[in-house]
Image 1 (spheres, rainbow, N blue to C red):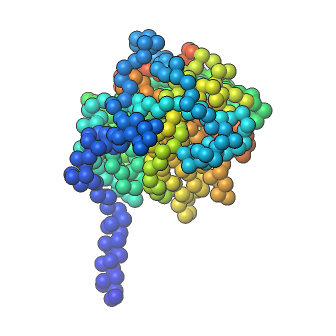
Image 2: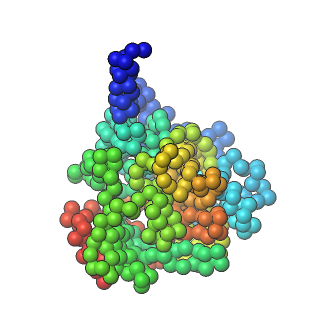
Image 3: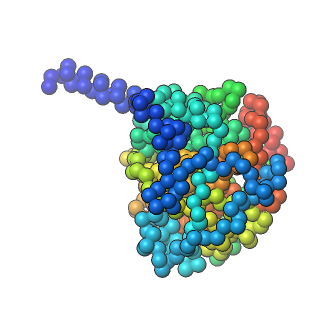
Length: 449
């Protein structure tokens, strides 16, 4: 090959590397709303009926729910476990357990998995379904998968072809236009003592899903105001995540009362210790994964049937800390596990990139695209941490609440629960805040004691 041809080939390779991946064909997209749900899950149940057919999700509140309450009761409170998985019988179910689940069963004799009847409760409004169908043939990833374009107000890739597309569905999951939650995050140390890490008010907004003016620039706004413990009271955190992180990275600010100023904090990303959990997790552990995908290669492994936390109302909405947090793990009596189909994505650290995790396995619920579990491996390739999302359907507004997470440190023997909604807490679905409230000056005002 002569020099001229070599240059042409090299140029074409560069163009392809930066170009967008093709969306699915119009013919393939016709599966949405027929054999697939409007957002890409299989409508049919599994062969033995242990996973039922999808019928639209849970959109009717149970009789126990008080109208307009922000504390959602368990619609399946009267159900009993079908069976339990423990260290003695775990090999029978090993193919349906995450590596972290198996490690916990081996490590703690008191840990068990109570499996309940599967309910496919996740649902989203009709307009999200309509936009998702349009996105199927229009949305594309760019910049090696870390950016997305052509998507609007719906899941971008209901029929995903690679790991990046699956993870974008998680990043652009629908949790409502705007949510305000009063929450508590606690760390349980190796001695079994629960210590309050933070408590406060969290505002989450999805400008991408704004009905009046959907954003083509940002997909997530986050603002946290810490009220406790006393040493953290008055602190504030604000994050804006873009759809094209290759062009414009995460914008982050912190307000520190002792300094009485708001400062830019670009380091609040990736494996920076998470301030909300007092460093017990990484920043990008929040919501199982958040932020830019630039440091990992994301490979789609496929789809599996797995036992995952689901309809975890008793874990999330709880009257007391003692009800949920045991000395070594979450109280099995309040945990609910169900069999669901999940997408499995393997993330491996790119050469030359830095992160405390060398590999991560993500498990995403097919009905909501929420990442519901993860296995994290350290630099030596050993299982280090395991995460689980305590997913619930907010049946009064037809949105999935998938923010609360539990992370187990399998080396230190500790764990953290980020996002408990105690009896004085709440999850409210509110109107988006005015644009001026998402400024550094507004963060300073919200954090003043």
